[in-house]
Length: 110
Length: 113
Image (cartoon, rainbow over all chains, first blue to last red; front, side, top):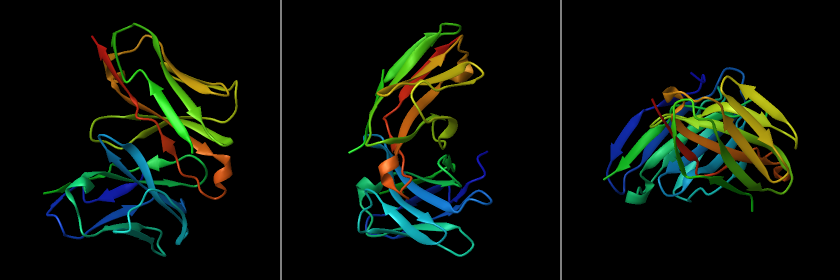
């Protein structure tokens, strides 16, 4: 158990809908990262937050957004969902360079 | 752009048969190279961090080594419970406060009893 929690574990929704994924980092970790894992692309970095502020963006679509709250939990919002957004979404947290991953949310878009 | 290539894509071993997984990388100044283990449907589990060429780290049957262009994950006398996908990732020093990881596609290891 890494200490990073993610909810929900599974999410099934329809095209065009909007969903919110939630992540709680390990106690004391100020940085939160979001990654997407699909079969063909592997693990891809989406976005990084540090103590409530956005630090870096990767291959994140404009339909996706994230935020980190004062209690350091983070949410990833995915809107206007498409079939191709079906994937595993992971959150990771760190205090330094080493990142510890949560169990993931499996998103299925039908 | 940072790149990580892992080989082989899949490896099947008999229990006790030692082998190595390869991770070759291109990065604009290496801050760290990371190895993770991932079981199906689960999150990546942190194994090792290597920071400079010549560094080695060990944990049970696993040993990770680093050169300026590649890293190896050596598995000695593997057991069926070592079966998993092993992921390699790099973190670039040039990223500043961006600590993103760039991952390879992984090596799927299967150890048969």
